[in-house]
Amino acid sequence: MIDLERLAKEEKVSDVIAFLVRKEGGYGYPQMDRFFTRHNFSVIGNGEFMRVFEQLRQSGVVEWGDKMLVKKGPNWKEPQFVTDKKYGIE
Image 1: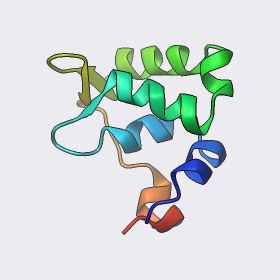
Image 2 (image 1 turned 90 degrees about the vertical axis):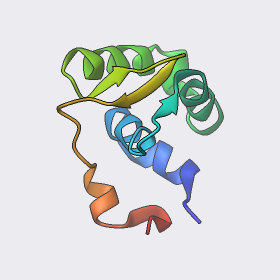
Image 3 (image 1 turned 45 degrees about the vertical axis):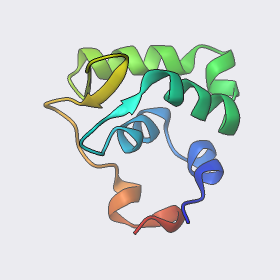
Image 4 (image 1 turned 180 degrees about the vertical axis):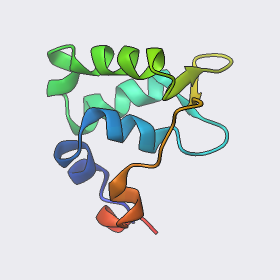
């Protein structure tokens, strides 16, 4: 089981966003917002999440899909902690 709380607190916001959108279907923006609200509210409260998300979108790491879905962009790369199989990632 993946330790999402530890992942959200120990990794960079940009890497966590890249992790969340890794699947083919993408990840809903509202669900992403709730993920950070639940596991690391400080990045929501200080506006870091929105700033980082917009930077990732502009740099092509993520892109908008249909109905508020966020998908991998052309410049998406797997975060290092996924490769290292940290936090229970298999």
